[in-house]
Image (tube, rainbow, N blue to C red; front, side, top):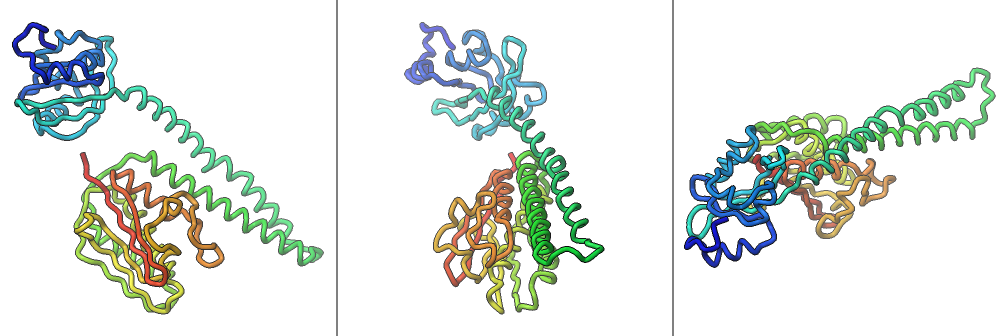
Amino acid sequence: MTDPSSSARTPTTDLLERCPGMLAHANVQGTLVFVNPGFAAGLGREPSGLVGASLSELAHPDDEAAVAAGLARAGGAYEHRFGHADGAWRRWQWAVAPAAGGGVLVSAHDVTALVAAAETAGRDLDVLTAAVAHDLRAPLRAIDGFSQILLADPDGALPDDTRRFLGLVREAGTEVADLLDDLVAVARVARAPLHRREVDLARLARELIEAVQRPSQGGRDVTWVVGDVPSCAADGPLLRRLLGALLDNALTFTAPHPTARIEFFWDADRGAYAVRDDGIGIGIDGDLPERALALFGRLQERATFPGRGAGLALAARIAERHGGRLWGHGTPGQGTTVWFSVGRER
């Protein structure tokens, strides 16, 4: 912060000084020419000791180049580590924008505590996921095993009703195991690191169609159309699960029709990829409701359409992990369109 008597003070710097947030002004080289008290406090320093310092040089050595690049762009939002006077590295979410009088304005928010809390919650989720994936399966295996022993009935003394009930027990155990699989899948999507690479979505769609049409089409006349879709930078295996879930849904909800048309295309107006079918409309008239994207949020009775209501939920979380979103619209008797975006790599 400049000295109060300095002729460099302006109404803008007076306003910034009074703002409770973390704000600073840097020149085109990234050198701080003004910092407000909140910005200085975030680094545990006096404002006067920061004027003339390079913001990128205050960053963690691994983040220094990225901070310099963000300042050079004079725009964007970022998350990096900056050095506090106590020797600790504080994680900031910060944004930069062009300043009216030249240079850039920087605003920041310390998210160190939030990140630490999220990491703790993540570790707890990892423990829970491991328990679901392994420990909770042991009693299910025992139930199924004992049921099989009873059903073997070498003496033929087991009543028919008892056999039927034991069969229902085994079916329920299998269903619980499948639900556990879905829970683990969603948890792992939320925690898995993204490995972005260039993904040819048209090719991916054709591979998925080849995989689902033979066992699932049931002899129906299904026309598959893959449009001229652009590639994107995304996690290939996760995107395969996302698109696979949408194509499988489309095939499921066109099942009542002897013929069907399912399209995968790029919607330039919305800047998103889309899967469109001419099925029953997934049981909605209008935009896809939030409950449809919730885990196990079904829109149709299970007796009418198979599934556990996890496909769309998983697809939506994959889109969100990429910085995008998933949404849809249906018309009863005419079909459904589901769009998704995957954001951009920052």
